Image (tube, rainbow, N blue to C red):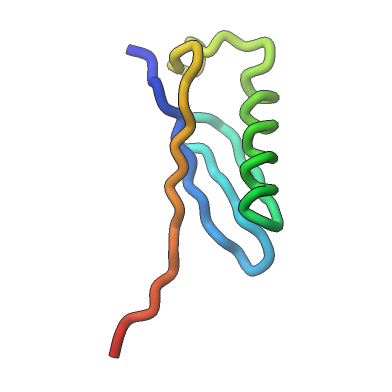
Length: 76
């Protein structure tokens, strides 16, 4: 069964947010979270342009799920 959701891991570097595809070979970045989202949309469109989504085991119109990694400080 084709995947209905494309997953991405989001992390924050020193100066940029980075998105790495779990289900699709896509990596992109942005200085702000909003810029990252726009770049990610464009990167996904470019990766799938002219391709059959089934070749990536994806449904025709999948959703995108973002998982964000956060650093937390332990409480004393």
